[in-house]
Image (cartoon, rainbow, N blue to C red; front, side):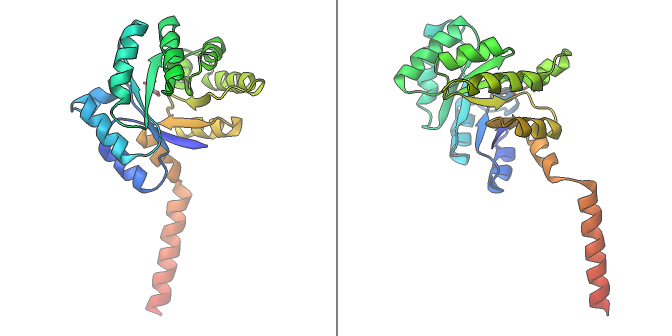
Length: 215
Ligand code: E4P
């Protein structure tokens, strides 16, 4: 299972990448806004920090505009992946970019039908937003299960990125289902390291060792 960071904050990416747990990064306009710097410069820096795929989203609403933006974004670095929004225009752009050899991540996916269309359009990644589904009283993880079942029936190359992750249990559930990738905020990845009993255990071992040293 691959771990992507869902952030544009370069310090967070740098710290966690140094630990070896960052296989890629996903950004979106809201996340780039939080980085408080020109988006192109932010993306260039992220691509230098991480060798895996870095998703950068187009803003145009029509496929022709999306393609123009996509070509500019793809020129930033070889590991840029173009995020296109779900919909007929986004999928048209995804298919054209696939034909040009540019990888895409179809974002804002909330149903199995949408994920099926993204795969047929040749998307490299599909991003179902599980947290936002949970927020409206639907099961995000049930959607992941459904998409993985469907993709398993065919030879689609599209990888499922479990997105809109809110807490470490989302990661555990996604891993149990065999999802390809989870993209998560830095705080979720950091929380995965922690357990109160680990802290208690470390403190006890340290104290025991100090007593041994005191003799
Ligand atoms: C994924 O690529 C998106 O950037 C992200 O996961 C959205 O998450 P949110 O619902 O927390 O905004």
